[in-house]
Image (cartoon, rainbow, N blue to C red; front, side, top):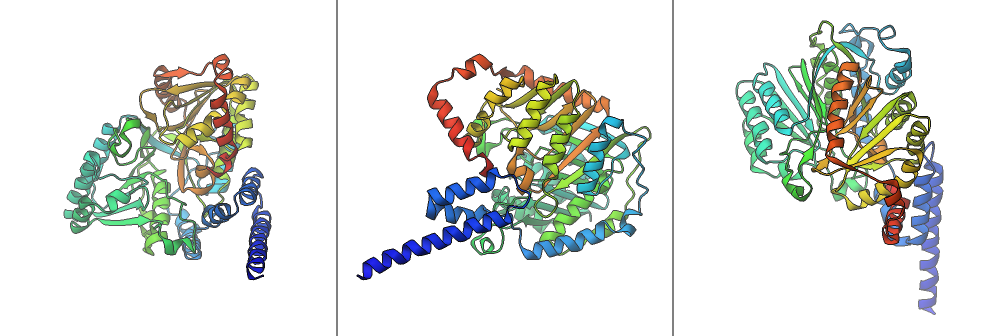
Length: 482
C-alpha cells in the first residue's frame, strides 16, 4: 500500500512540476519567437527529469538582481545628458544615404549611440599583425590600457600581450583586463596572470560560473565582447581573441581566421563606455570620469556606429538590425560567420534577399569546432540553396570572422555570430561602417575567404545520404536552444 501511495505521490509531484514550468514558460514568453518556448515544452514533456533540470539551468535569461541594479546605475551615469554633452557628437542625418538611415535610427534606439564621423579605421585580418599592433599601442600608452576579451590564452600571443601590459603597468600606466571567467579559465589559473597581477595589472573574471551563482543567475550567459582601448584615443574591436592563430586548445580546427579593426576617432568613446559598463558590473568601480577624454577627430574621417547588445539591454536589437540590413541590400550581400543557427525570421529575411535578386553569399567553416552547431547549421542549407543563396564552406581553418558587406557600400563587423546565443544571451559588440572604401576592403577580405572555400552544390546536397539528412534535421529541431 505504501509503495502505491509513493508512486502516486511521485506522479502527482512530477505533473505539478511540469505543469508549473509550462505555465511559467508561457507567461514569460513575452515577445520571444515561439520556437524556443515550444521546444522547451516538448523537451520537458518528453524527457521530464532532464528537461526540467535543463530549463531551470539555462531556460531563462537571468543575470542576477545585483547586476541588473548595477547596470541601471552605470547606465544612468554614462548616458546622462551631462556625460553625453562632454563631446560634440556630430549630427548624422545629412551624412548618410537615405537607404541606410533606418539602420542608423534603429541602432541608435537600441544602443543609444549615433553614427559618428571623423574616424580612421584599419582592417586587420592576420592574427600576429593584430597582436603586434596591439602590443605597440599598449607599450606606448601614457594613461591607461583597457582590454576586454572573451578568450585570453596563456600561449605565445597571450604572453606577448601580458608582457606589454606588465611593461606599461611598471611605468605607471593604469592597466585593467576584463576576461570572461569561462572562456579564459585557463588564463585565470595561469602563472602569467599571477605575474601580471604582481606587476600591477588589475584582472577581473567576468560573470563567474559556479554552483552558488546557478541559484541566482544563468551561468551560461557569457561576455563575448572583444575590446581594447588605449588612453581613450585608440581602440580595437572585432573577432580576434588573445591567442595564437593555431588556437592550441582546439588545434585540430586551426588556424582561427579573424577580422578586427583599429579605430582612431570619436567612436573610441563609445567602446570605452561599453568597457566601463562591463567593468562596473563585476567590480563596483566607476570609471566614467574617463569619458571626459576627448578622442582625436580625423579630418575627412569616416562615419561609424558602435552597437553594444546583451541580456541586460534590449536583446532583440541585434536580430532586428541584421534583418534590417538584409532588407537594405539591393545588389549584393556577403556574410561570414562560424556559427550559423538563425531564428526562422532571420533565415526568411536572408532567403527573401536572394529571391529578390540580391546576389547573396554565406561563408561558413567546412569543419566546425562544435559538431552539434555544424549539424544545426546544415539543416538550413536546403531552403537557402532553393532560394538562390550561394553557400561556401571555408577549408583553411576555422573561419571565425563575423562580417557582412552590403552593395559594396555598407559594412558590419561584429563579435556576434548568426545564432540565438549571440542574438539573445551573450554580451556582444558590433560596428556599422557607413563607407564604401572600407566596405570594399572588407569585401576583398571576404572574397579571399571564398577563394579558399568549396561551394555547396545544390544537386549534390539534395542527394546526400539519408543518415546525414536525419542528423541535420534532428539537430536542427533543437536549434532554438543552441
